[in-house]
Image (cartoon, rainbow, N blue to C red):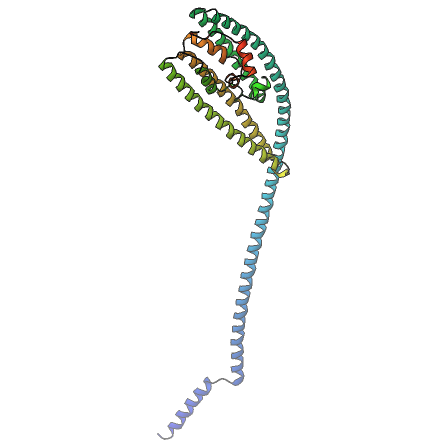
Length: 341
């Protein structure tokens, strides 16, 4: 029994010795672990480098795409600018030729209107003399009514002629270049003010009934309101036109604003066209006022209105002035017996 124990201990020691490594072997194992750790670290660096390269490549592609898009946008803008410049040149040629043609037509239209007006005025004076003779001769109402209606129809022709002339040269008609210098001082939108004419004539027509006085007062008030509205509209148009022209002059010096400049000039020309509409409305107001006045008054009372109100050469303001040389000349030429005298 005693001999067996040592052998058992020897066997255990041999087993422990089998599990122990030599120092050289331990160094090899440690080196192997270090290599694996180093390789793992290198792999991580490589992965990071690859990720950075991929991100840089992605950003490079985005920059290239943005640059290409910028080039495309620049090309489109250049093409658009060339097209606008071409349109502006075409508009400039068109407007230039149109202005030259319009200037020629306006000159011919103004001259034609002046000649037509001279012929119209000659016939008008003949009819006025006929009515003056009928009034002074105390003609009957039927005869006076026929003469007044004939003058009314003839007077409507001048409004038609003015409308046609305004299409060719609205400034010629609106400024009253076809009238004498003294008469131009009293012009309102190419003619007389209906409210002033009513104010003047209402003081010379006696006797008048209460109904007639009320009708004339209402007509004068409505005429004044219409005149104020047209005057305000005309002032607004003139201001807008001045601002448009000022803007076009300010932008004309820049080549890049050629299209904008031509657009503003076209807008200004469009606003100039509205002057014709103002003139037409003013003439309509004058016609309507005279027609309403005839409806309010009797035939014999309308005769003085026809003699005074239908004379385009007579400024109504001058007619209201006493001791006026022009007033005396007009009164002598258009002298007649007022109703009741």
